[in-house]
Length: 512
Image (cartoon, rainbow, N blue to C red):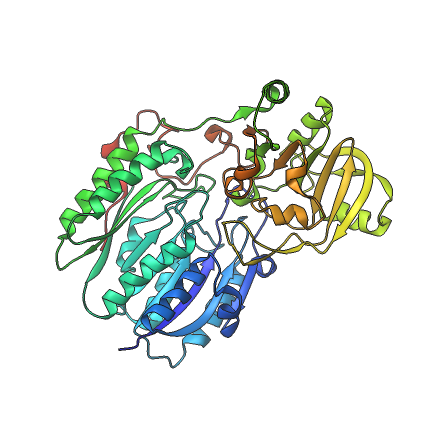
């Protein structure tokens, strides 16, 4: 039997502390595909939609392509954009007789009208397809998973890697469960629990042995039990000031073989394991220690390749502005040479330098235009325009491989030994092709600076002689105390040191 399955993606990670709103243009800069354009652009890519298409091929599904929309992390999604997305999805589903629905979420999206955009959209979808149609969804492991979502969703599967190199694989796993549900081989349901924590699981890192890898091993053991269909550990996203910010455990189970109470018990056990590791977090280097670390690096005998420095606190992948000058100022003061830095997002400077033309020397006021109070303030620098680009690339690294991306109009600006990639749009520097958009070949430099926290490791780890993460004065700092939370549930760790795991029961009821 061939099943008809609708697919939709509404995917953005919301930093509620950002002054920026996320609008339709921001989705267009990443992707906003409708109908057949979804398959045309996503087939063969390492993306959730790419994995869904693989399922269509494997199981013979008839796909109903609605909308695939993804935006760079930023502020809340504006209401006009949400309504446009809903209207486009509703039109695509009109008159369709479906057997299932497949949804691609991030899991930490907020809109102007809802702190939980996932529940908001699921309620809309259920209003269209009814309460009984199987609905599967994939999630980023930084999802803030609200327990109430369990009442609206049958299948939930999260990424298991950070950097997220398993997007398509995650979708294929969710698709296999959806196929079994449509065949009536399973009766899937989910249970969700949260410990009283804002952050944890070592932020989900999986590139080395740590809290997250330990938690995944424990979750895998549970997944091996009869009737447990999938287990997910979400590290949460602490740049969102909402009630359910923080880590979660999600159990997908077959109600024909596992009771709701047993599923809840498994989720509670995982929450206890998360809680026991609440202080197990990697630490970043403070900015004032960077000059010494650079000197030590070059004094030591290390393997060939650049020193890769991550501007942790100005990561646009967390919704930061990508225009902090703190780290750049530190490098200029240290007198580094043969270095590259990217991407500094400053559309006004890009326009000025493009008008000046190739080879032009200019003095510009760079950075911190969105919020001068965050990131060190604008700085005056003088340099030469060495390249101009439209900023369009195709991801080649493990993450998003094959998907298009854009920095917007961009330039390479050489300042005192540093080639700076200046872009018109915010884009986490997670792929070497982003540098190559302006003719920068990262492997040829002694120092490569990327505005990223962890995703850069997938593409830049193989060429790096050493990696240093620096936490400067940016919006996505690891310092929880730098944020003014007002909407998170309380008590919650680490804001309230008296928080206890037993408090989770009151704030994380399971509806399945």
